[in-house]
Image 1: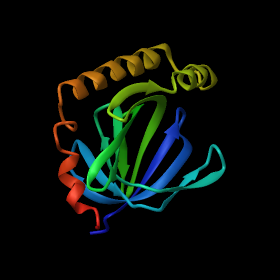
Image 2: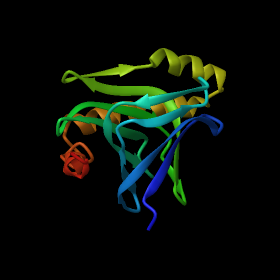
Image 3: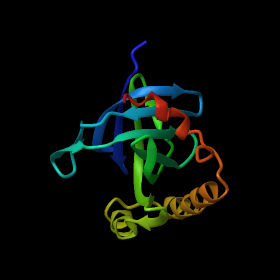
Image 4: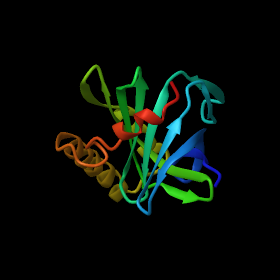
Length: 168
C-alpha cells in the first residue's frame, strides 16, 4: 500500500491554495491521520513561494467535521496545535483536500486563540461566501472550542497516540 498522502488546502471555489506531502498513519471512513515530516516543503500557490516546515506534525483531517488539526511535536511532546475551520475534507486516491474558510484556532504556550478573523471577513467578500456558509463557519468554530474544552475526539489523547511513530 502506498502510504504517501498529498494534502491540498483550497480556497472557496476549489482554488488550489497550498499543498504538502505527508505519510499515512491511520485511515477510517470518517477521518485520516497523517505525519508531516520535519523539513518538508509546503508549496504555497497563493503566495507563489515554497516554505520549509521545520517541525514534525501529526495532522487530522475529517471527512465529516468542519475542522483540521495540525499538532507540532517537539521532543516527544505537542508544542502547539493549529486548527483550520474548513469544509469537510475529501479523499481521492492519495490526495486529501479541504476548502479552508480562513478562521483558525490555535494553541501556543498553553493558550488558545482565534486568528485570521480579518482574513475571514475579507475572503467572505472576495470569494462571495454564501451567508449560510459564513454562519456555518462561525458555528463550527464554537463547536471546535467545545470539543477542545471537553477533551472530545480527536482532543482526547488520540493525536498523542501517534507521537511514538515519529523517528527519533
